Length: 300
Image (cartoon, rainbow, N blue to C red; front, side, top):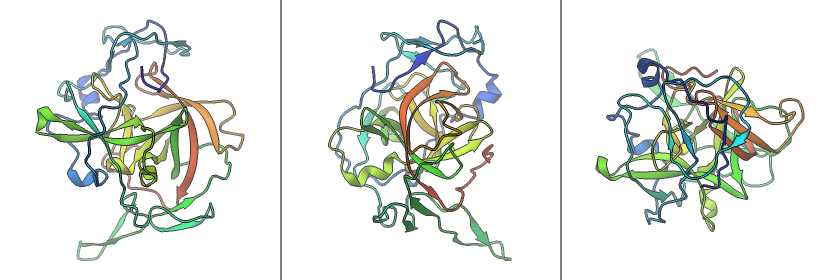
């Protein structure tokens, strides 16, 4: 069992979406993140497979889940089987490599807190201006303002970290040997002694979608966090879209009305409401301009 806490709605099952809807939120086997979309792998020394999550949860497409509160913990033992699109890639085995170093040229502003950083290299620019000739000019910069000032609610552009038992969750590149060492990026608890320059790998940008929130990772090429079916990694970054797979409901007391800088939250996936993550959400700061919406994004 991982350090990540998950809870179940009991023995109820999940209704599988039609194939065409599922396919719009998951990659096909031909789609893998491009090399430039992930954080620079400055030190490729393998640190070994990180902790796997093994909650006892089996999802059957023939039985729907009623909309009720999820309260009972999932006993350990079985593997988890997330529904996926028909052609979604299986990941029978993958080795995880911690991304030791980040391109920190401008992404780590100095103290004091709440000081505006220079142009951030952590996230790609939010937009690019196009001249009358149709040729894109230099993209507009995005600046990260470091601030842990307590605020109520979560807003688009806020930057947070997810922490459990003092260990932040960071972006990890997973090698896929069966696809000629192609890689994807997943979210795993950091190991002890992770270098300080890896801090930016834990940054997640908040994107609001109605009452739900999405978490976008610059380390994963601005892809959104979502649960994954049978795989060594339960949380992955596959899509630039903020659809139902990538949207999370926040369960926490007075989080919308009372200012906070660190707060215990349970994040419940919109598509799979029995998948819940119990973490400490820690404010890092916010971006001065919105990020790229991504193709076919539902984000606002």
